[in-house]
Image 1: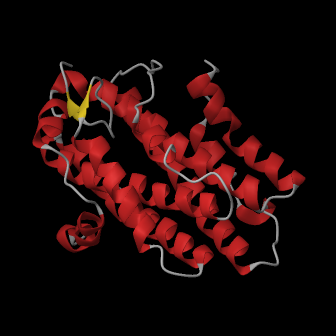
Image 2: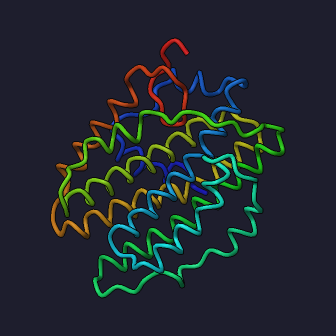
Image 3: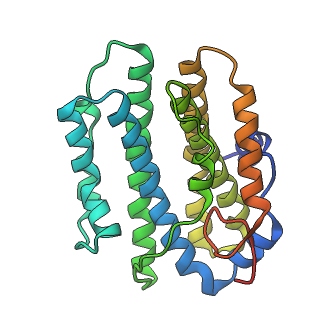
Length: 254
């Protein structure tokens, strides 16, 4: 895999690189359980975001329920202290055949992009969970970072521009994930380094899918909104943060 070529558009899209202070804190061995836990939860939240977009904008009642059923075992385990299911068996049951058919081109593009994203994010979820099990890292619930909420709080509240803003936010979240995986990988052990580098291609494609969908739905130039959210995202990354998470800012008295 040509990592510099893959990362180049991601780095150009983001308005700032990850600060060295975050890398220094994140690479400390005692913080690995926290980061793996947060990473696993972030993969589920990414799948939830994609599911909500389909349910809100294109799904009928039956397919909306099918989406909820897809994610319920993951959500029960992560948020409701449910039993740990067979994640591999669950993943094999995911299929976009249950999704609605839509007469709008943008609706079908949204379905195709988001269903693929859901499947990949849930696949990454159980990959991280397997790494945690292999390293005897128990799953313990943690608080969410301020990052995604800080981005989405700037989204406009009327349609169709709210959807466009949410998609742009999704692009930045995926791009930052890709950039951080690459930034942290050199400081990890061989197994984890290989795993995080293996995620770069899908994360890079996810940000491009979100951005392309936003442009398609807008039907015009969205560069001003992309630039706006780029500035919001960078401010969250370079400002002090009192908790360490995969998308947190500069460590402040952590």
